[in-house]
Amino acid sequence: MKHCLDCDWSADSTDLPSQCARSRAAIEHHVETGHAIDSTESLVRPTVPDIAGEIFVRDLVPSSD
Image (cartoon, rainbow, N blue to C red; front, side):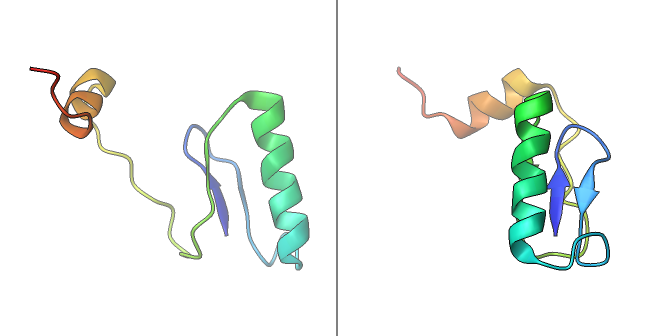
């Protein structure tokens, strides 16, 4: 299953039976919108933390101090 991390777009095997077709649709969605795509095999849409991006990035990137 392919999920957009920025909007409600998704593609699964009921929409597009072949993995290749789902991948192509995900790439096309990214090219058209610039949105990030999650390609995990999970049937559930991934959750994105409900925090400010600066805080999230600060916690992921090592300090330069």
